Image (cartoon, rainbow, N blue to C red; front, side, top):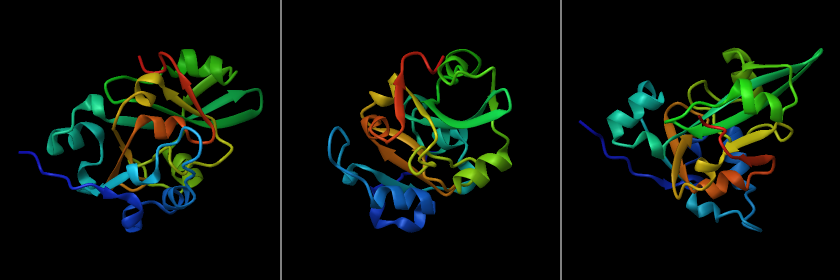
Length: 182
């Protein structure tokens, strides 16, 4: 059984957004290549179904239309850099190859859950690239950036965002990479 989702413009439902996500959308600039903020929509979901596979099955969303945002910790010497990687749900981020090289790190691993939650101000399982700390690298797979309308987290487990991939590519620290998702 699939439930029908009813996305609405995200700024109409700030209660369905993490504070950082709502702030980022409120200050959205339509200048340059960024699609208008009205193209960013949100829909409420069952928080127990926030994980990608369960969400896609219950709501009839193809995994190729859904993207995951994973937080990684890149280490070089005593320095650790947190970054985000966004890939389609049908792929996995090439953390030990492309991400490690791009971040010039000796070692890259997924950030611990408590670190990811504390540093983003978002809920685990709902972390989104919209509203991440301004100094974090944001690596986006080209397939996500070119997707006409992709689903990502909202910062909360109880909702999802729909937006053009170009909107993610236009975020301030975004860098679009070929083959980030493998």
